[in-house]
Image 1 (cartoon, rainbow, N blue to C red):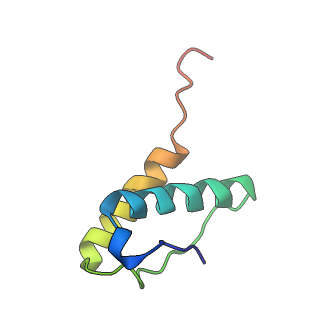
Image 2: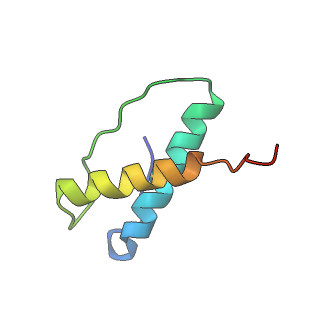
Length: 68
């Protein structure tokens, strides 16, 4: 479970950050697959929640390694 902060401070970017931190945490545990529920994000439809979480996870897991 991850907190999203105060309802009045909630933004798309906060949800992206939560998606990124969750994905990084799961990766660091060595878990290859995980599930995210879309409950709890106030004032946002399911499609937007999903988009923001996936964007955050993708950005949070991105590593530039072209020159390694």
